[in-house]
Image (cartoon, rainbow, N blue to C red; front, top):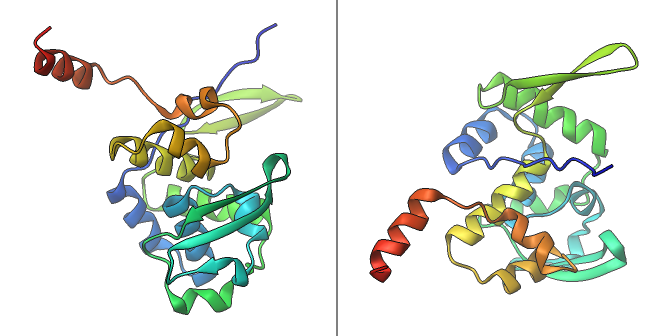
Length: 183
C-alpha cells in the first residue's frame, strides 16, 4: 500500500509577520525566525548552539542533523546579536509545535481543514504546522530563483527529488513562461 504524502502549504511574508507579532516570548520568536529564515527543522533549532552562529559571515553550522549530516546554512535576516544569548533554546519539540499552533490559530492565519479518527477520537488536521515554516523558506528560495541543487544543500537533502517536492507547478507561471518563449 502506497504511503500518503502531505503537501505542506507555505506562509507568505504577511502571514509570518502577523504570527511573529502575536508571539510573546522572545525565545519562541527566535525559533520561528530560524525556521522561516533558514529552513531549519525543529530538531535543528532545538540543538543549535550559540558558537555555531556567525552573524558577521551570515552562516550557521548545523551539526549532526537528520541522517547524521553536517551542513552550513544562512543566518536569517531577522536574527540579531540580542537573540544569541537565548541560544541554545530551552524548549522542547512538542512545546514549540504547540506554541506555533496556538498563536497561528489566534492570529487567524491557521484553521482546521479536516479531521481523521484515531482510537475512536476525532483528530483535527490544520492548514499549517511548524514544518510549514521550513517549507516556506524553500518556496521563497525557489521563487527567488535559487538553483535547486544549491537549495538541496541548504535544506540538507540527500536526493534532489526530495528538494523538488517544494517546487509547485503554478499554471499562471507556466503560461507566462510559454508566452515569453514564443511557444
